[in-house]
Length: 116
Length: 116
View 1 (cartoon, rainbow over the protein chains, first blue to last red):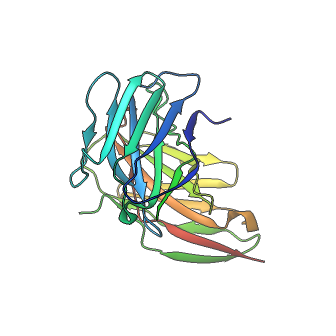
View 2 (view 1 turned 90 degrees about the horizontal axis):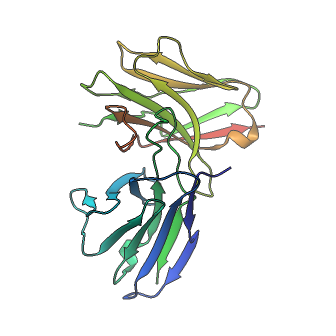
């Protein structure tokens, strides 16, 4: 069964509004979670690393004020796309590593965001 | 420089035949992990197989095997007895330092089409 749950699977929002995406680790605690973005026909690109109890670290070129990350508990990280614009339309997917299981790396189901 | 290179944007294979998807990587770390994922049109990332840099034997998981050539820095995925359901995007990924707290870096992917 899934070890990482992501919600919602898809969302359509109006330009200028904010959207929150949740990533939960199931049956294990994750002090770190990773957020990736995938534009159509492209690969997954790391956006940011979410750290429980501290600030997220963002990759170069990712606006931290636009993509707010909150890792408030050991099983939940949220990504909020603020003031979304059509160019933010993409597939967002999270990964929650299990430290002791380096031979696997599981992902959430992903969220397809469409901004109209 | 790209850390993961997948040179085949698209591949076709006849049903029941075997196919090899190429992947080369670049790292100066001695400890790293190599992963292959399947991404169907739904977007979910399905973990297929893992190879650790210190593993002497090639990894196998059912119909999937990883042809690991460390000196050449290649980690090709071999799918035997292709099925129509194997049609999808396939991504090769690497995790340097092979720690659960390190994110994966992905190649650009190969789209596999299985023909009946």
